[in-house]
Image 1: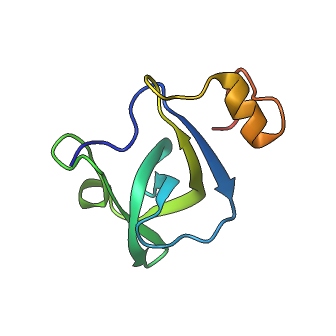
Image 2: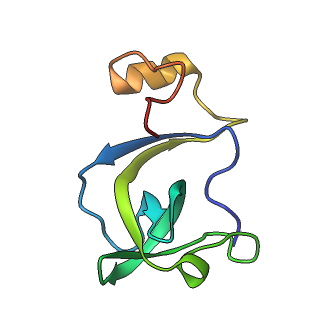
Image 3: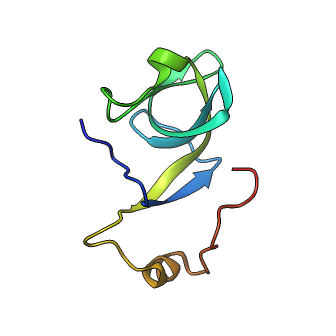
Amino acid sequence: MTPTLLPGDLVLVRHGAAVRPGALVLARFHGQPELLVLKRALRPAAGGWLLASDHARAGSDSRQHGVATVAAVVVRIWHRGAGRPAESGVRRWLGWPVPAAPPDGL
């Protein structure tokens, strides 16, 4: 499978949203808490979720890193390149300004 997200894509996440198998999530593996990843939720596991990479041959996932804690669920993706809305389109969709940089702590 090819990756769902490519460098430069924008994502909107919802903290506290219910995680469902198949959802794209923002998470941290228990064994690498300093690493923030976007992966596909597979199923709940003891203390978190098992996650999969959409690009299994090139990516890493719960097979290498174990269980992860999900921080947020991806609710919208804007792909870079042809057909990607301009930042003004993102602002219109959100109804508020898009920050120039990610918030501290991510």
